[in-house]
Image: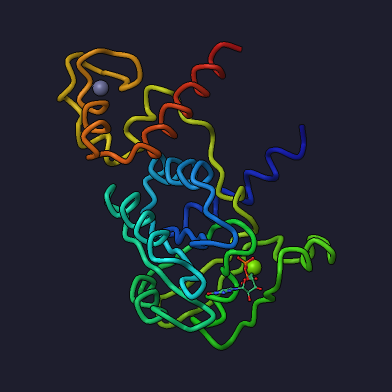
Amino acid sequence: MKILPRMNELVRPALANIDQALVVFAVTKPKPHFHLLDRFLVMMEAKKIPVVLCFNKTDIAEDPQINELREMYAGCGYPILFTSAREEENIEDLKNFLRGKTTAVAGPSGVGKSSLINLLQTEVKMETGSISRKIERGKHTTRHSELIVLGENSYIMDTPGFSSLYVNDIEKEDLRHCFPELEHFEGQCRFNGCSHVHEPGCAVKEAVEEGKIHRKRYENYVMMYREAEERKRY
Ligand SMILES: Nc1nc2c(ncn2[C@@H]2O[C@H](COP(=O)(O)OP(=O)(O)O)[C@@H](O)[C@H]2O)c(=O)[nH]1
Ligand SMILES: [Mg+2]
Ligand SMILES: [Zn+2]
Protein backbone atom coordinates (compact mmCIF):
# COMPACT_ATOMS: atom_id res chain seq x y z
CA MET A 1 0.00 0.00 0.00
CA LYS A 2 2.93 2.34 0.65
CA ILE A 3 4.59 1.59 -2.69
CA LEU A 4 1.87 2.92 -4.99
CA PRO A 5 1.85 6.60 -3.93
CA ARG A 6 5.63 6.70 -4.19
CA MET A 7 5.49 5.32 -7.72
CA ASN A 8 2.96 7.95 -8.73
CA GLU A 9 5.16 10.71 -7.36
CA LEU A 10 7.86 9.54 -9.71
CA VAL A 11 5.56 9.34 -12.69
CA ARG A 12 3.51 12.50 -12.32
CA PRO A 13 6.19 15.21 -12.37
CA ALA A 14 7.79 13.52 -15.33
CA LEU A 15 4.55 13.67 -17.30
CA ALA A 16 3.65 17.17 -16.14
CA ASN A 17 6.86 18.71 -17.42
CA ILE A 18 7.17 17.19 -20.84
CA ASP A 19 6.06 18.77 -24.12
CA GLN A 20 5.99 15.57 -26.09
CA ALA A 21 6.85 11.90 -26.06
CA LEU A 22 9.25 10.34 -28.51
CA VAL A 23 8.17 6.76 -28.91
CA VAL A 24 10.95 4.58 -30.24
CA PHE A 25 10.46 1.13 -31.69
CA ALA A 26 12.69 -0.84 -34.03
CA VAL A 27 11.44 -1.61 -37.53
CA THR A 28 12.81 -5.06 -36.85
CA LYS A 29 14.92 -6.85 -34.21
CA PRO A 30 12.85 -6.66 -32.16
CA LYS A 31 9.74 -6.46 -34.38
CA PRO A 32 7.25 -3.83 -33.16
CA HIS A 33 4.74 -5.03 -30.64
CA PHE A 34 1.69 -3.23 -32.05
CA HIS A 35 -0.53 -3.85 -29.09
CA LEU A 36 2.02 -2.27 -26.75
CA LEU A 37 2.53 0.63 -29.13
CA ASP A 38 -1.19 1.34 -29.53
CA ARG A 39 -1.70 1.09 -25.81
CA PHE A 40 0.99 3.67 -25.31
CA LEU A 41 -0.45 5.97 -27.97
CA VAL A 42 -3.84 5.75 -26.26
CA MET A 43 -2.30 6.77 -22.94
CA MET A 44 -0.63 9.76 -24.53
CA GLU A 45 -3.88 10.78 -26.25
CA ALA A 46 -5.69 10.54 -22.93
CA LYS A 47 -3.05 12.80 -21.33
CA LYS A 48 -3.04 15.07 -24.41
CA ILE A 49 0.70 14.63 -24.81
CA PRO A 50 1.82 14.94 -28.45
CA VAL A 51 3.71 11.95 -29.80
CA VAL A 52 6.50 11.66 -32.32
CA LEU A 53 6.98 8.11 -33.55
CA CYS A 54 10.47 6.93 -34.35
CA PHE A 55 11.19 3.58 -35.94
CA ASN A 56 14.88 2.78 -35.68
CA LYS A 57 17.20 0.19 -37.28
CA THR A 58 16.25 0.94 -40.89
CA ASP A 59 19.69 -0.38 -41.87
CA ILE A 60 18.53 -3.95 -41.22
CA ALA A 61 14.90 -3.46 -42.35
CA GLU A 62 13.16 -4.43 -45.58
CA ASP A 63 11.16 -1.84 -47.53
CA PRO A 64 7.78 -3.59 -47.05
CA GLN A 65 8.27 -3.48 -43.27
CA ILE A 66 8.90 0.26 -43.40
CA ASN A 67 5.95 0.82 -45.74
CA GLU A 68 3.54 -1.05 -43.48
CA LEU A 69 4.54 1.06 -40.49
CA ARG A 70 4.21 4.25 -42.48
CA GLU A 71 0.76 3.20 -43.68
CA MET A 72 -0.40 2.25 -40.19
CA TYR A 73 0.73 5.31 -38.27
CA ALA A 74 1.18 8.20 -40.68
CA GLY A 75 -2.41 7.42 -41.70
CA CYS A 76 -3.65 8.34 -38.24
CA GLY A 77 -1.75 11.58 -38.16
CA TYR A 78 1.30 10.89 -36.03
CA PRO A 79 4.60 12.44 -37.08
CA ILE A 80 6.71 9.48 -38.03
CA LEU A 81 10.47 9.14 -38.47
CA PHE A 82 12.64 6.30 -39.68
CA THR A 83 16.18 6.31 -38.34
CA SER A 84 19.28 4.23 -38.15
CA ALA A 85 21.45 4.96 -35.14
CA ARG A 86 24.05 2.60 -36.53
CA GLU A 87 24.36 4.43 -39.85
CA GLU A 88 23.43 7.82 -38.39
CA GLU A 89 20.56 8.11 -40.81
CA ASN A 90 17.87 10.81 -40.35
CA ILE A 91 19.36 11.99 -37.06
CA GLU A 92 19.10 15.61 -38.22
CA ASP A 93 15.35 15.12 -38.82
CA LEU A 94 15.05 13.74 -35.32
CA LYS A 95 16.92 16.75 -33.89
CA ASN A 96 14.47 19.06 -35.65
CA PHE A 97 11.55 17.40 -33.89
CA LEU A 98 13.23 17.83 -30.52
CA ARG A 99 14.39 21.43 -30.81
CA GLY A 100 12.99 23.82 -28.21
CA LYS A 101 11.09 21.09 -26.40
CA THR A 102 11.30 18.78 -23.43
CA THR A 103 10.82 15.28 -24.71
CA ALA A 104 10.38 12.02 -22.85
CA VAL A 105 11.77 9.01 -24.66
CA ALA A 106 9.86 5.79 -24.30
CA GLY A 107 10.02 2.41 -25.94
CA PRO A 108 10.84 -1.19 -25.24
CA SER A 109 14.33 -2.40 -24.45
CA GLY A 110 16.78 -3.04 -27.26
CA VAL A 111 15.27 -0.77 -29.92
CA GLY A 112 18.12 1.76 -29.84
CA LYS A 113 16.90 4.53 -27.52
CA SER A 114 20.27 4.95 -25.82
CA SER A 115 22.13 4.74 -29.14
CA LEU A 116 19.95 7.55 -30.51
CA ILE A 117 20.38 9.72 -27.40
CA ASN A 118 24.15 9.33 -27.72
CA LEU A 119 23.95 10.71 -31.26
CA LEU A 120 21.86 13.71 -30.20
CA GLN A 121 24.43 15.19 -27.81
CA THR A 122 28.00 14.68 -26.62
CA GLU A 123 27.80 15.34 -22.86
CA VAL A 124 26.10 12.21 -21.62
CA LYS A 125 27.06 8.75 -22.75
CA MET A 126 24.26 6.26 -22.27
CA GLU A 127 25.09 2.63 -21.91
CA THR A 128 24.02 0.59 -24.91
CA GLY A 129 24.04 -3.11 -25.50
CA SER A 130 22.27 -6.26 -26.43
CA ILE A 131 19.18 -7.28 -24.50
CA SER A 132 20.79 -10.45 -23.17
CA ARG A 133 23.83 -8.60 -21.88
CA LYS A 134 21.58 -6.18 -20.00
CA ILE A 135 19.59 -8.96 -18.40
CA GLU A 136 22.82 -10.65 -17.34
CA ARG A 137 23.99 -7.53 -15.56
CA GLY A 138 20.63 -6.93 -13.96
CA LYS A 139 18.53 -3.80 -13.85
CA HIS A 140 21.21 -1.30 -13.00
CA THR A 141 20.37 1.40 -15.54
CA THR A 142 18.38 4.62 -15.04
CA ARG A 143 15.94 4.10 -12.22
CA HIS A 144 15.31 7.82 -12.07
CA SER A 145 14.44 9.88 -15.11
CA GLU A 146 17.48 11.72 -16.29
CA LEU A 147 17.10 15.08 -18.00
CA ILE A 148 19.73 15.50 -20.69
CA VAL A 149 20.44 18.85 -22.31
CA LEU A 150 20.34 18.78 -26.11
CA GLY A 151 20.72 22.50 -26.70
CA GLU A 152 19.10 25.76 -25.76
CA ASN A 153 15.64 25.00 -24.33
CA SER A 154 15.87 21.44 -25.61
CA TYR A 155 15.87 18.56 -23.19
CA ILE A 156 15.39 14.87 -23.47
CA MET A 157 14.44 12.50 -20.72
CA ASP A 158 15.33 8.87 -20.88
CA THR A 159 12.48 7.21 -19.07
CA PRO A 160 13.26 4.01 -17.23
CA GLY A 161 11.32 1.47 -19.25
CA PHE A 162 8.04 1.64 -21.02
CA SER A 163 5.69 1.34 -18.08
CA SER A 164 7.05 4.44 -16.36
CA LEU A 165 4.70 6.65 -18.33
CA TYR A 166 1.76 4.47 -17.52
CA VAL A 167 -1.46 6.23 -16.64
CA ASN A 168 -4.68 4.84 -15.25
CA ASP A 169 -6.77 2.69 -17.52
CA ILE A 170 -9.17 4.51 -19.78
CA GLU A 171 -12.95 4.08 -19.63
CA LYS A 172 -14.39 2.29 -22.63
CA GLU A 173 -16.51 5.34 -23.52
CA ASP A 174 -13.38 7.52 -23.75
CA LEU A 175 -11.33 5.04 -25.73
CA ARG A 176 -12.71 5.97 -29.16
CA HIS A 177 -11.47 9.54 -28.63
CA CYS A 178 -7.95 8.23 -28.10
CA PHE A 179 -7.67 6.86 -31.66
CA PRO A 180 -7.34 9.96 -33.89
CA GLU A 181 -8.42 8.12 -37.03
CA LEU A 182 -11.64 6.90 -35.35
CA GLU A 183 -12.34 10.36 -33.99
CA HIS A 184 -12.36 11.52 -37.61
CA PHE A 185 -15.58 9.53 -38.21
CA GLU A 186 -17.32 10.71 -35.05
CA GLY A 187 -20.92 11.69 -35.78
CA GLN A 188 -21.11 9.72 -39.02
CA CYS A 189 -22.48 6.49 -37.52
CA ARG A 190 -26.18 5.65 -37.39
CA PHE A 191 -26.25 5.76 -33.60
CA ASN A 192 -25.17 8.63 -31.40
CA GLY A 193 -22.19 7.68 -29.26
CA CYS A 194 -21.58 4.59 -31.39
CA SER A 195 -18.84 2.48 -29.81
CA HIS A 196 -17.78 1.26 -33.28
CA VAL A 197 -17.74 -2.29 -31.88
CA HIS A 198 -21.17 -3.90 -32.29
CA GLU A 199 -23.63 -1.31 -33.64
CA PRO A 200 -25.10 -1.56 -37.16
CA GLY A 201 -24.57 1.34 -39.57
CA CYS A 202 -21.13 2.10 -38.18
CA ALA A 203 -19.04 4.47 -40.31
CA VAL A 204 -15.82 3.28 -38.66
CA LYS A 205 -16.42 -0.38 -39.51
CA GLU A 206 -17.22 0.68 -43.06
CA ALA A 207 -13.97 2.67 -43.21
CA VAL A 208 -12.05 -0.41 -42.04
CA GLU A 209 -13.65 -2.46 -44.83
CA GLU A 210 -12.72 0.23 -47.34
CA GLY A 211 -9.15 0.31 -46.09
CA LYS A 212 -9.44 3.89 -44.84
CA ILE A 213 -8.67 2.78 -41.29
CA HIS A 214 -5.91 0.24 -40.74
CA ARG A 215 -7.40 -3.08 -39.67
CA LYS A 216 -4.72 -3.78 -37.06
CA ARG A 217 -5.34 -0.46 -35.36
CA TYR A 218 -9.08 -1.11 -35.35
CA GLU A 219 -8.56 -4.61 -33.94
CA ASN A 220 -6.45 -3.17 -31.15
CA TYR A 221 -9.19 -0.66 -30.44
CA VAL A 222 -11.77 -3.44 -30.13
CA MET A 223 -9.41 -5.46 -27.92
CA MET A 224 -8.88 -2.52 -25.57
CA TYR A 225 -12.61 -1.81 -25.56
CA ARG A 226 -13.36 -5.38 -24.49
CA GLU A 227 -10.69 -5.18 -21.80
CA ALA A 228 -12.23 -2.00 -20.41
CA GLU A 229 -15.59 -3.74 -20.43
CA GLU A 230 -14.16 -6.70 -18.51
CA ARG A 231 -12.56 -4.42 -15.92
CA LYS A 232 -15.91 -2.75 -15.25
CA ARG A 233 -17.46 -6.10 -14.53
CA TYR A 234 -15.33 -6.76 -11.45
N1 LIG B 1 21.35 -2.56 -36.75
C1 LIG B 1 21.14 -1.60 -35.85
N2 LIG B 1 21.36 -1.83 -34.55
C2 LIG B 1 21.15 -0.84 -33.67
C3 LIG B 1 20.67 0.43 -34.07
N3 LIG B 1 20.51 1.19 -32.96
C4 LIG B 1 20.89 0.44 -31.92
N4 LIG B 1 21.27 -0.79 -32.32
C5 LIG B 1 21.75 -1.91 -31.50
O1 LIG B 1 20.65 -2.41 -30.74
C6 LIG B 1 21.06 -2.78 -29.44
C7 LIG B 1 20.25 -2.01 -28.39
O2 LIG B 1 20.56 -0.64 -28.46
P1 LIG B 1 20.33 0.35 -27.23
O3 LIG B 1 20.67 1.72 -27.69
O4 LIG B 1 21.03 -0.15 -26.01
O5 LIG B 1 18.74 0.18 -27.05
P2 LIG B 1 17.79 0.64 -25.84
O6 LIG B 1 17.63 -0.55 -24.95
O7 LIG B 1 16.50 1.00 -26.49
O8 LIG B 1 18.43 1.81 -25.14
C8 LIG B 1 22.56 -2.49 -29.37
O9 LIG B 1 23.24 -3.68 -29.62
C9 LIG B 1 22.76 -1.47 -30.46
O10 LIG B 1 24.06 -1.51 -30.99
C10 LIG B 1 20.45 0.65 -35.47
O11 LIG B 1 20.03 1.72 -35.93
N5 LIG B 1 20.70 -0.39 -36.29
MG1 LIG C 1 18.89 2.11 -23.13
ZN1 LIG D 1 -19.50 3.61 -35.20
